[in-house]
Length: 107
Length: 118
Image (tube, each protein chain N blue to C red):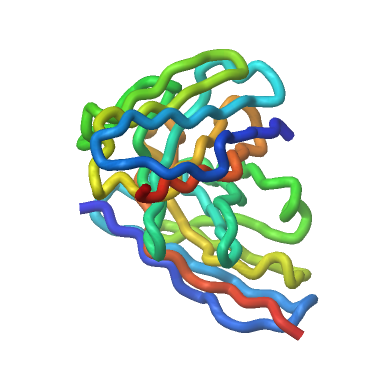
């Protein structure tokens, strides 16, 4: 199975900061990557698919980039509601696999 | 609107079986694939299984292959879990793919908790 490695596992940031989370695949997955946000006790929410396509209704401060093995989720001008955990997910090959997650906390 | 409701969770002993259900409404159920994703307490997300819109293809995580079976009928998707292990303890979510052209899980239920304990 393809392994997805996220970094960092956690970070502290302030409202208004720009935050970058990376995800590395163990093999080339083209642009077959999505990003999810999850808040405690809630189901995950799809933010980005196809590495860079914003899901309907997701604020434009979220953006994704990358291809091959290296991907990035950027949150510009962090808002209070953005403090959550974030996961990458590859759909290039079955079984699909998530990264281990990144927790974004308030500084 | 799209609604998914999981049920069937509970406490079960190791080695036993449990069947989860995912009831769908608010969309043309037979046109969409459905995923199961789980999350162990305090841990990250783990993709578990996918069934295509017509049930013709099914895919599983390596950790559940041979023990779990995904199926569907006209309005529900099921996850039959046999040979349960302590490390199968998790909240299990079902999720509908974003569109018939893209399998990304985009609409999620609230989850059902499965606890496997001696």
